[in-house]
Each structure stands twice: as C-alpha cells, then as structure tokens.
Image (cartoon, rainbow over all chains, first blue to last red; front, side, top):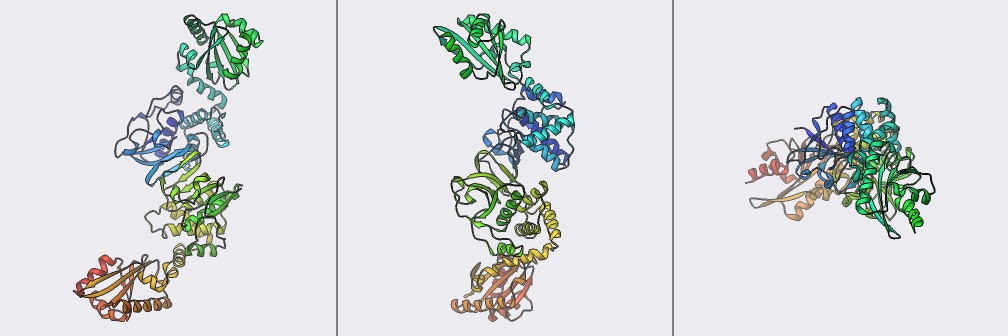
Length: 307
Length: 307
C-alpha cells in the first residue's frame, strides 16, 4: 500500500499543497506514495486547486494499524491526523518548532526555519534534479504566498522570496497581483455573510448614554469588498442598529497591506465621523489612511468627541 | 559569543568529527561557531585527529544560560551535554531515532536514515558549494568508516558508501586498508591490558569436575595482535590458570571481518583442542576459520569431548 503524505488537521493551503507536491516529487523518484488530507479544503486552497487544475487529495480521517505516513507542515502528534500512534511514521518535512515527537527508529526529519513547507519542497525538487511542472509550481508558489502573507510575515525569509519569485517567473505570474487574488479568494468576505462580517470581531461601547457598535474585519485588499458586498454590509448595519437601538454602528474594513481602514456606517454616523476625525466623508463610508487599530485609533477619538 | 557545535556524551568518532567539520562548514559560510566536545576523545578518534593534524575540540562539560548550541550525532536531551536545558538550541544534524526533543521556536533539524552524521555533513558541504579541504575530508571519511564498520553495518547505505569512496579518492586512500588502520588504532587490544583482554568478556564452565575458562575479544584484524601482545596474553592466561586452578583457559580472538577466531591457550589445552576440533594446532594457538560464537561453536564441542 502507498505511503500517505499528509498535512495537519484543519489544513491550510501549505498543508494541502505540500502534501500534493511532496507526493508528486516522491512519485517522480519512484516511490509509492499518495497525498491525502485529514480535513476540509478551505476557500483559498479550493481556488488554488481549481486554478492549477489539481484534484483535492483524498480525505482520510483516521489512520489504521499498518498504514505508513509522512507528515508535512507539522511535527507534533497533537496536530496530526487521528490514528498516527497506530501507524508507522516514515518522515517529516516542516518549518515549525520541534514538538516532542518520538519514533522507535531513525526517520527522515527535515525542519527548516523558513516561512513555508513548500519552500523546502521546492528545494527538494532541485536537490533531486526533478523538473517542477507548472501545476506543481503553481501549488508551491501559492503555498509560499499564503504562508508568508505575500512576503509580509515576520517568518518570511530571503529563501522563501527567491524561491517564490523563481516559481512565479516560471508561471509568468506577478507575485503581488497573484498573491492578492489568492487572498481575495480565501477572504472572510467570501466566506462569511454580510451580517457575520459585521459581528465577527465586534464590540459595543457606551458614550454619554448612547450605545454604539464597532466591528472590524482584516483583509488583504479593499477590492475584496465590491459594491454589491458593500450594499449588503450597509443593510446589515442598518438592521443591527435598529434591532439594538444603537446611536450608530461602524465596520472597520482594514486593509492590512495598504495599512488603512475603510469605515462603513449607517448615515446617522456621517457628521459625527466627519467632525470627530476632521475628514471629508461620503454618506456611508470614508477611508482613513494609516488607521489600523480600533482600540488605539478609533475608540479614543470617538470617546473624546462624544464625551 | 560563538554557537557551540557538539556531539553526544561519551563521544565516538562521528560525534567529534561531525562537530569539527560542521563547525568548519559553518565558519566557511560566515557563521560564528566553535566545535566543542563534552567528553574524552577515544583512542580511535585520537589517531584520526593526529593523522589529519587537527586539534581535538575544546572540552566543555556543561553549558551555561545564554549559550547557543547546535547538536550533531544525537537529538535526545538525555544523551546531550549537561546544561542543554539552560542553553538555546539552534539546530540538529543527526541519523538516529527522533527522541522527544521540544523547542519553543522553529530550529534547523535534519535527521536522515544514513549510517553516519558525517555523510549528511558531506552533503551539506556540497549543497553549499563549499570546498572540502583534505583535513576535513579525512575526518568525514574516518567517521563514516567508523560508524559503518567499513560499510559492514546494517545501517550503512549506498549514500554512505558513495560519499566515503569520493572522500577516499580525494585523499588517495584505500577505504578497506585505511578503515582497518583506523579500527586497529581504536582496538581494545591497544586500550586494555593483557589481563583485561582475557577477562573482559569471560565465562567459566564445569566439565566432568574440571573448570575451564573461555574469554573472547572481537577485533577488526588479527594484525592488531602482534607477537609481543600475544606473549603478554599467554602470560596472563598462565597466571589466571594457576591462580584459579583451571584445567585450561582459552581466549577467542575473533576477527569480525575475516570471520574466524584465533584461539590462544595454555599448553595443557593443546591436545584437547586438537582432538576436540580435529585440527592441527600450535603449542599455544590455532586459527579456526568460520568460528565466531563461543556459545554455539566452542562450548558444545568442548562439552562433547570432555564429557
């Protein structure tokens, strides 16, 4: 029977892409392996698999006695597929802390301090002189952009960048543009309903007897919120304001790349926001450049103005 | 302060050579590292360091808070230098089972299923395009020959052989010949006294009211026991026979490469051995080809003859 290659529970893009690409590399090297997953494919990963025309790996929820397994993107038993203790562990490729794993005999165990498992797998293709097909290059690139938040994560290294840039150049893709496309596909905006977006990370405040609500979502690009979505969010805001008897409700749509927030609000907030922040505003929105923190940049200003 | 590179407690040749060569590689790559050891250099390793004109790494018995350390040839805390839990672990290169190590953050951890850590380090020189000096090639080759018992250990892989052969060819050394030289230098014959050689692995037997003794040592080549040493051993045998009132005493000097045993004994045993084994014997020695096991090949024959 094939050796399973599998990422962690609640797989993210790297866990799926690393499993698929490492299985591909090992197959090219003549090994009998099969990529599997132990959880649901998320929206971002689904977009990537569709784009590069690769089927999601088979779902296996639990290993059985006698199964052989190779872990990617994790090395802690607590994060691994159920039944690991029954199976025979044959190897690990990862980029996390070392988490107390024990084996009875020697195994291949490769952990590097890079931003993404797929960076290491790209190196393994090179070390073994195996050509990386465009499909596999697509998965590897996507995983690196996902794990490093398009090179912005503090865990991102020069090696991640170099390798991602090489892969992007093979595919003729612009790293920044494709990265944003990928994050947009996996964005909360596409996963949550308008009402859930408003209330997902949400707080109420009392100022001089009035109650207001401030929600926040973080996204990679304001493009993720198109006019239709904006309309739905504003409707949800109106509903909640009426239901709760708020003075007003703000949703901070924070662009973590551009480092600014689009505020969406019910029309009653328009003048308050214009005066409190001393800015020109639209009827139900305003973009505040440099504003990222509800706690430090929004609430104190409203508190001062409303007090 | 430099990062220490260190092998396990009671260091063998691989633990010393891997520390020295990995430190050399890292220095060539511009890292501030220093090879250390946490125990005595054994006779084999001393021979190797002398031969390639390399000083033994500094002895450090315990790490202090704030020390940074990189482990080679082991990954289990219980086998590591004292004070490891106080220090900051920055990496591991090894070829053993995974032994439950935990770190707070990601580290470099490379474990491969090869016969010797120095095989992996040779690969690392190549991966980083760093030239291997003759001195370093000598240490790497020696460690591989030592750990794999000149390619005879079941843990030895094709990769160990290929790499050792490349290193030997760089140095103009014959692998078999140099390997035996190395094992001879580290042989028990050079480490133990004549009396200790006889009694190191020793058993008494009773046959029809007579007591006999049979000792065994395992060596890589009978050349390790020269005529002087043989004389010393025979004197030790005579002394013990007299002291204990034995009928006779045999020492099996087993050549694990040639797969045979030289028996050394007091003259009283001569006829018994000749008749029991049906061979022609010298006054105090005989070589028995194919005889390796005291339990299966010596004791049953003597038991039958003496009963």
